Amino acid sequence: MSDEKLIHVKMDYVDALESKKSLLNLEKELLELNEVAFNFSSLRIQELRAKVKFCQGIKNLSNSLMILKKNLPEGKVPRMMKEAKVASGEKSERIVKKTRDTRDIELQLRDIQEKLSSMQR
Image (cartoon, rainbow, N blue to C red):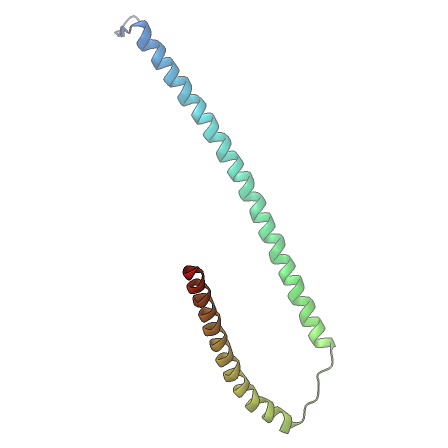
């Protein structure tokens, strides 16, 4: 140690006190950040466990549905009924889409009408 050159820095009391406060505030913030990081990691672990549990529940439900589908008897529908059902299914889809569109338009018209009547009052 005698071979090393020592360097001394002169600071007045106020500067030293401010530096000490800044250092302590920095240390406090680092500890708070560490706590937040720890809380985040524990919450992330809980989230992943919940997701795994959810996926297992979905798989169990899917398996139960497959078993139920296998065990239930399949209905016998005559070929003519199947063909008629397919043809009517296409028509009914078109009708449903048209009624949805008209309902949406009717709702929008009602909203506009209500806004106009409220503006006139």
